[in-house]
Length: 128
Image (cartoon, rainbow, N blue to C red):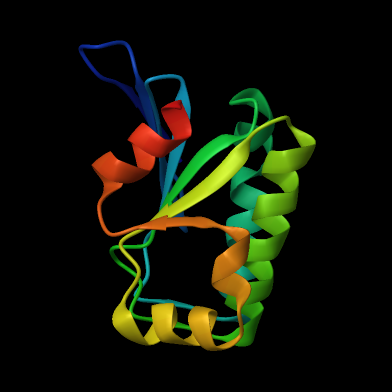
């Protein structure tokens, strides 16, 4: 795991499964992809849970690098949402691949999240 500081004072943590960055007081989690399967989802959750708590649950999950997600990945989204809520915040998701967005919509799981196409729009919604 590598931690870097940016000129703006934000920190970037490069872990085995995700890159995590703090920006505008919010945590941005970017799974490395290209898929999230059962073992990936467990690893991602274990990697980010402490950072979620430290960010008061204000989290953006940037899924731009993920092309496939199994049902375990959907469960991971719900668990991450719960962790955010327990920390007093909320979860927004950006950059979903069309097949993943379709599955979330078909299963009505999309109703649990703020989902936007762009990272900027998601950060704006979390900042409201």
